[in-house]
Image (cartoon, rainbow, N blue to C red; front, side, top):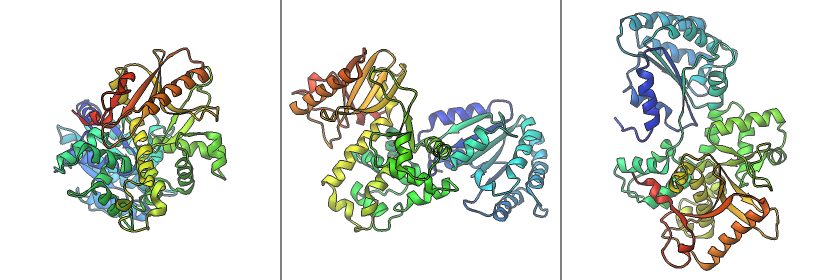
Length: 476
């Protein structure tokens, strides 16, 4: 059996739920390919009183057939139920003696739950009745449901205002691996990947276990990318497949993602509305909320001229690594099976590496805060651009701290120790000065230099007090 990598907090939560001495109804959600099913199967060693998985795009008849087949595996020998109420009634009849006899947890696992709710079906009502009228009253039952259609999970379970209102006892939002967990994933399989290669893989595909599973021993990063993405690779069309599986009307979601892919620093709602046609306010709100819940984008606030956060307006930024990689190179996907290897080290790849490294940093803000010694301090983070076009000043990452300090972060990707030149040092000082002048902030403004391998000693490096090496995030 494969080893569970990372997921320490989720495992701790599951330990607590198993030992709670009451009925538990747990929803595990997160973007597609993130490892929800794997987590539950590994944790419980595939020992379930009942388990079933819905079929993506399956018909009502197909979903019912899957459910009945799962019941037959635990002893059901009746006819196909006429509706979902009867189906859950039969399931209750099967499980009731097991629940009464068992002295340990009786685990019911329904995977890809949203698939069962087909058009005009009674599934959700019947499912609610199953929990409310019976399962909820059995202290040793643990009902676990998973779903990749994250928006459906939040709308119908987490934020349900009907039969399942306030019935969910716990929720687990599973997110992608960190850099450290990604390194641990490959180390566990004895791949022998260097920290730099792990970083590069992360910059292209993020910490999504499903994608990481496609890598092979003995391949360079460029060779693996050519095989997986270019000239018909298995991940070349993943973007379309992913959104088709997540949303019943995927096109507007894909249009918003495509627009955000062109806006490195993030844009506000008005700009999105202008950039993506035929989206009314209500529909756009729903799309943005769902994309944020699915961890494809992040919402953040920036500062006004007074240096204070403007909470009346927000910005949206694309953060999903695969999607950024997809839109950067999709037009080159059929250019030849060795496109990435042949162009590695050239501007088209180098530009992407720099931008992707910035995303790595912003998705590891918790580790950045720990390196700065401010883990317990409330912060907001965002990128910033001067309104004075003549100054042409843009800051990769601003960390606004509740202790009246602003960290101006300069993020530099380099495949070796970074050497801070006089020119770059003066640019950093200028960015600090312009930010302080335009925002009129009364907070202290301190520069931070963030690289991967660290900063080469000597020269102007000593002039920057705070320096962070992202490679250290992979260490125990």
